Image (cartoon, helix red, strand yellow):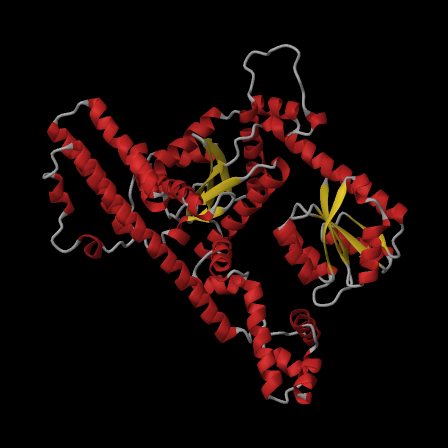
Length: 553
């Protein structure tokens, strides 16, 4: 069932369209409605529809502006115009904005059902292209550029001099002459196999077993890779390949500056995440590493991207996570090549006390099984402690407050004679540091939100204030900020901004004789009618009614 929202400023027209036909009969369900483009964008963000059926002429944000925003932010959504203007003008606008088609008012049920049939065919075709089992099998066999993937894998696991890889990079279509790079990694968060995501009519059952059969999990991974390559190729952003359990992106900076490049990379990866969730019904998490100027530092950016994935335990899965948002002051690079080191680091940063105990128990179990000498045991313990102390240093843990001035942890190692004592000692250290990191992270989040609130309170009169402008002021990505703000304030940023503006408007109505349009401009609304609309929506009465009520009491 495809999801559709109806947008029209005339409630009678809107309700008439919704009640005109049995939508389910044609493969659609109404998941929302709105009476202007601004409300439509809010609805789209909440329900992520497949189709938007919108009027062109509406107040505050018309259908043309809405279509432009949808095309930029949600390019997979299909748009249909409702219009009363002549066919030629509408056709011109539809082509320019990539609109599927238009329907002239008044809308008849016949025209509407014909349009829905056409849209459904387009959507079915897109999904079939993404999911077709047999096509993917054949494409999979023909698309194994082993040498290219081997070369790209080496780029993120070994440090190379730029001149050493220039010739090979060009032969594989990778732009080496770049002003900078970012490595990102995608992890599939679902355990479902590909076959479970197919519609029944698309499943193919083979009568006889084939040699070299590709299992369904591999096909799901290949379908995710296929979407990733398609969207990355559309923007000519860089290269995509697989490494271990991840899909890896190396994006290259060409003409823009560093900040624009990072924002553009985030936007592309978010489009990839949304497309995979939509077409494959599969959640994925994407980690973005740090920006690096030289190709020899790609392994560091890759390790940062993998580290960013660990934070999905805190931020929840199905997100794009930028490492700089979570570890902004991590200036010293650490190379945790061993799985044991990364596992210990991860559980200290984002794990629970129980997970820390389990990881350390596993590390000490290896000591027992290896039957190493006492001297080697002390070296092994020192290596573990070094990893712990590096994590504490990178995340600005105050070790003096935690352990006291005279407590030298490294010297303590040589006093520990029993493995059980050492395990308990190290576990307690890790849990203390973990608790401190958790408190610091909460304090950091509160500080970011506090600065945003202060910025809004000081600048709400600016009609051009948007979430991107605030994030640029705070040097933080909009996706992470939105999650953070909602978690701390229990409301979205836009709702908070509107609340501040409305309270300021009430005060001006109460204490001044300013006209409504003057108050609208004073509190950040360039359109007085939209100000009145928002005021009535929030308080149930218009600004003039509010003032009259005050005067009468």
